[in-house]
Image 1 (cartoon, rainbow, N blue to C red):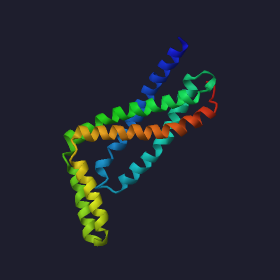
Image 2: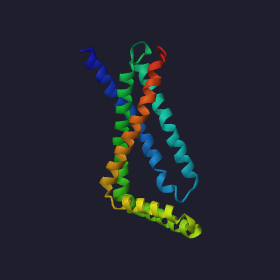
Image 3: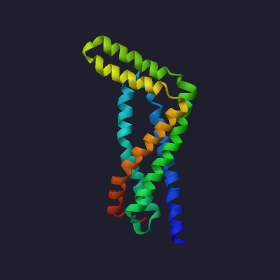
Image 4: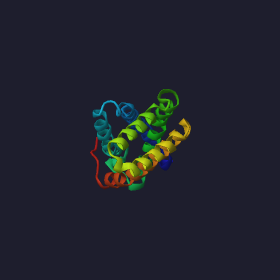
Length: 180
């Protein structure tokens, strides 16, 4: 019965903190269309992206301090919590991705990127090979439907979440939390 309670706590906590992480990712994703018109937003986006592991650590630490006996958490429990938190966040942000690519963007972002590649190729002809490779990548993305693109982004987010979960779980499981 105790293991079931622990599992429920992990899943419920991961849903709660995953929702917060997902909202953070949605707000971060809202900057993407502005990157091409307002250069400062690209710096904001990169800064917020760099903050994701720290926010994940903060959430796992909060979970440990609030729900784990004596503020201690094992590596496997912390790792499972991290994996689930990032998975729930990826599912939530996927809704925003799909709505954006299906109903809002209409290919505008990729067209803007292509025009930027044209300008780059005209300004620096020696970069022709690299521009060609980027254009092939953009064409590959443009051939994807909104649902295919969304699924790809979900898989990317879950993969990156898996990678971030290992060091985060290790660090959180080493430290003892505050007793509240």
